[in-house]
Length: 173
Image (tube, rainbow, N blue to C red; front, side, top):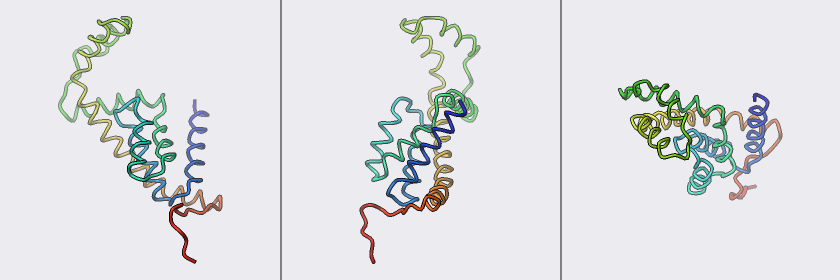
């Protein structure tokens, strides 16, 4: 698992070093992707990253690379932690006997009405804590990503002797 994570980070870094944009714009696109990747919109991360990067004129490859930083083994702990913390801050109590009721729901087949109804009833009080908690944490992660990515991209490009010119701007001799 750690080897897969290192490989994913290495591939993302190589993509960021080889974009033909300034380090600040590349870092902004990557941070936008991280924000989207850790947002509550699970399943729409790639589409949102591409659409928002296009609308903002940012590098779509860097945005998608950022969106993919939310790896599958990070998702459950991240969303659980942000939801629980947000629920506490918002004063929303966890449903009574939450773990037991969740196990009971998951003992049923997911193709039945009872499964989805039970899951909906159990999770309904946690919808707003889930949305607000993950959005706040995504914003913090995106800001930290931008702050760390700019110098990392600059150093990486210097190390690889790569220019960082904007492709649409002509150089003045």
